[in-house]
Image 1 (cartoon, rainbow, N blue to C red):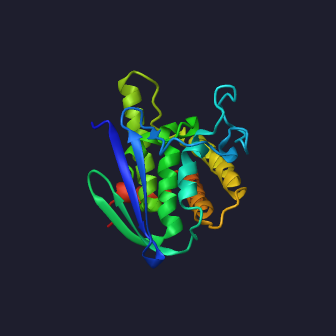
Image 2 (cartoon, rainbow, N blue to C red; image 1 turned 120 degrees about the horizontal axis):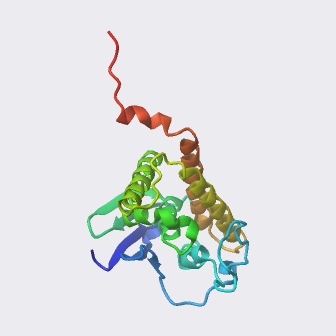
Amino acid sequence: MPPLRTFTYEFLLPGGLRRSYQVRLDSRSGEIIPAENRPLSRWTELDYYRCPHCPLDPAQHAYCPVASDLEALVDAFKDELSHSPCTVRVITAERVYMKEVTVQTGVYGIFGLIMATSGCPHFQFLKPMAYFHLPFSTVEETVIRVISTYLATQYFHAKNQEEADWTLAGLPAFYHNIQQVNEGIIQRLRSLSKRGDAHTNAMAILDAFASMLSLEIQEQFQSYESIFIRKSGGD
């Protein structure tokens, strides 16, 4: 396993402008490697719209790990309008993905990747899924990836003689916590004075995805059962 895993998002914007953003992950910890060394803004401080369920000790964590990891991305796209059409190419070690989308759609993919690999304890269970990041994934693809990642994690818990959850009973709490973090980040972003809105709307899309996943969890993924369990018809 290489020490670094990289995902490079390249945007071809209106007027021929090109913008590139790379996310680098530490393969051992699954956490993001900060984009650059830079002074952090007030909106990234832990007590700024702090999530009500944040488990971090302010004495040890001056900054929100999600907000501080997102700052460079927010700054890079602060002037972009969410609905501007663009071509996004995502380069990984294994393959290249490309799609005609709006700026907000391209940016929200990076948002999700960064948040899942930040130091926020509420995103810990998503780190394996982020390692196998799938750009432009649909809700349906994401649902299956969530289930697969969660059950694979339980397998390794059982293998190490730890308690395993084979009924997905822990998923609702995980996504409830994630939605609260999403709401906190949206509040932080809305407080900023930026000319563009791509970053705020990208975050809103990500939160909408989380809401749809929570609904599927509540319904026990019933709409997917027929794909996996093929029942024979009667005479």
